[in-house]
Amino acid sequence: MQRAPAFIAAILATALMPFAGHAQIAVSSNDGKAILVDGVSKMPDSPAPDTVTIIDLGAKPPKVLAELQAPSSVAGPPQNVAITPDESIALVCASMKVDPADPKKLTADNRCSVIDLKANPPAVIATVEAGSSPAGVSINRAGNMALVANRGDGTVSVFTIAGKTVTAAGKVDFGNPKAGPSGTAFSPDGKTALVTRDGDHKISILSVNGTKVEDTKRMLTGGFRPYPVQVSPKGDIAATGNQGGGAGDIDTINIIDMKAKVARIVHTIDVGQIVEGLAFSPDGGYLAVTAQDGSNRPASNPFHNAKGLLVVFKVDGTTLTKAAELRTAVWDQGVAWSRDGKTLLVQSMGEQLLSVVSFDGKTLQAEGEIKTKGGPEGIRTADK
View 1 (tube, helix red, strand yellow):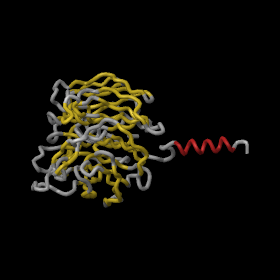
View 2 (cartoon, one colour; view 1 turned 120 degrees about the horizontal axis):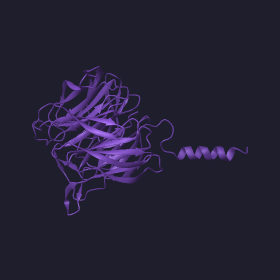
View 3 (cartoon, helix red, strand yellow; view 1 turned 180 degrees about the vertical axis):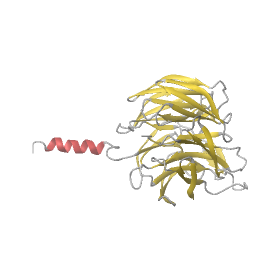
View 4 (cartoon, rainbow, N blue to C red; view 1 turned 30 degrees about the vertical axis):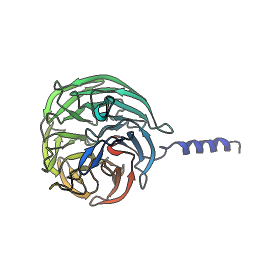
């Protein structure tokens, strides 16, 4: 009986820890500065604060654990969020902000917020500065380095991570301010990183040795305006998505053979208009891709569709085969997998919600929605 108070205190402490147990954290960044009006992206008269929604993707159904304010932006691929492997912190980067000199316009931002996911409630504990218009961010599986693509100045910012402290550690400059670095992705061993460049339609390969990050000068050329990028958890392939020219044509994803003597693009697969987000399942067996597919166009446009596309491909080496397809969101953005590969979250910027979708290996089924404050435009889970 003497141990009862301590026992009860332990139970209460556990109950107050929002991410204890078997939770799988997904972080969605949400832009309050952009809305879709008859197929046109506009800034509202009174922009709402940007927010971050923290979700337990391991719950059935997924549930919101917390919401907080942090700067973000729909400009750039839906990968402006990254989470450390131990799910202790998240980085959320903001490409654009309201112009202090003219509140009716947007201007380049340079902030990345460090969010303590273990705090109760979760909170922004620091802000670090990247380059101009930081977009895609990734964290290596060792949890000690982050790379941020800066679309506004043709660079990639390097940050070191020690516990919950994020420190600037230099930049990689591509020598072309208009290269438009957009997405970044580490290989599982952390020795290589890919950077998409939607300004000059290339994909750069970086070498990583400790805290030293260098441009190998090796560049891949796939589709028009490469945007999101991710390396498979198996490390054998990577996928990039192409935004295309925005003229109603069907756009593509590229598959990169990472195990070849020299990494190169080996397949190009059509998806839909304007490929926006992609994510490998945790076991590397599937690749989920979102395409706006006309859902962001005016109803009068000949290429308009009421909903965008979620497509899941089965992965067999470097070969991808379509497994399932679902029309699920308006102005689609990012997509994230549950750890068991049975649930996906798909961001709808136009409807300001996350679609909850089930997957059984053959079919996709809409199961519910999670409303967000602002338009969800970036989402990630931790790479483990």
